[in-house]
Length: 87
Image 1 (tube, rainbow, N blue to C red):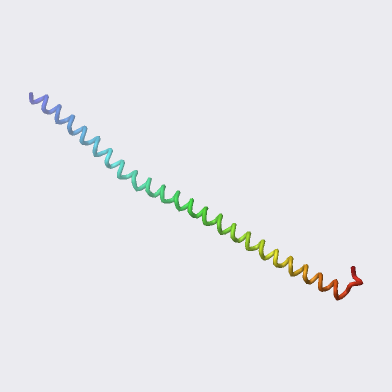
Image 2 (image 1 turned 60 degrees about the vertical axis):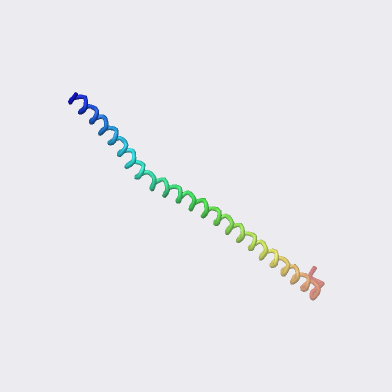
């Protein structure tokens, strides 16, 4: 009977050790997973913001070029009126 009790106690201790090991491993993995998820979300947000910033910059530059084009056309028309013989 004594040997059976020792064996049962040993089995119980082994099961407790397995559970503790599992809990310790989970506690180590959870912060890692949280940090990884946070980094992925940060990257996703940064890419989104970068895309929209570039998109806005491109459209702003296109608008500036359109304005310059109009000014050049106006200047060209004025010059043609001032110097019609240069056509």
